[in-house]
Length: 107
Image (cartoon, rainbow, N blue to C red; front, top):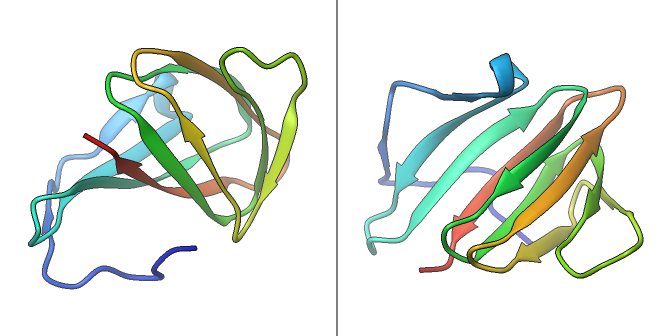
């Protein structure tokens, strides 16, 4: 699924803070030019919009997601991932422990 760490990256040291601090991430650029963010979602129910397609890797905790065009919430746990189409919205619900993720921007 994913790396536990990334080598040789450029990190934006100022955090991206969304939803009054319920989601916080840092942007990364890898040597090959690809972009990622690593972050955490605290217990909440949030709606995220995407510009480009994304792959979300769960690296800690659990969440429930509702993807565009789907009617049923799905649980995602550590070691699992899900894809979100470009120019869409998805719902995420975190209860209990924080949800830790790596977001891969697929542009």
